[in-house]
Image (cartoon, rainbow, N blue to C red):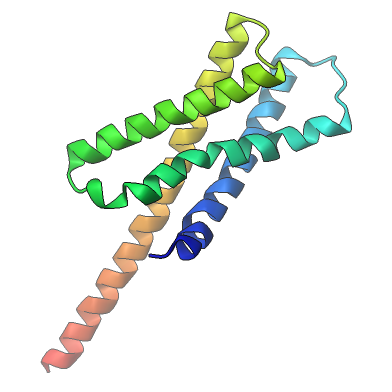
Length: 147
């Protein structure tokens, strides 16, 4: 698969899922912890930046896509991808000045982990449905040609 095709099929949908989940998490945490605060318009652009940062581990996915053939290799890869994602997001949040206490660090890290799990689950379900439809089409094709 070419990088352009990989970008269109994997990075762009992942980016929009990440941004959607970041917006949802920001709204939920804002209602829970910062109910009386007012935000400025520039705050609305924060999820777009963090969504782009959240797609950086996908570049490693493209580079190492042929080495994830065993279940243990896939598990190790996903853990490494989560760790890389945590480092990228927490570093960017620290540089921007979002991380003002240890509680904020833990909340952001937990939020990143939940978003990573949600995006991974949605992508797995989509890939599984696609594979099931391809398998059904192949089964129908082989039944029709066997007669």
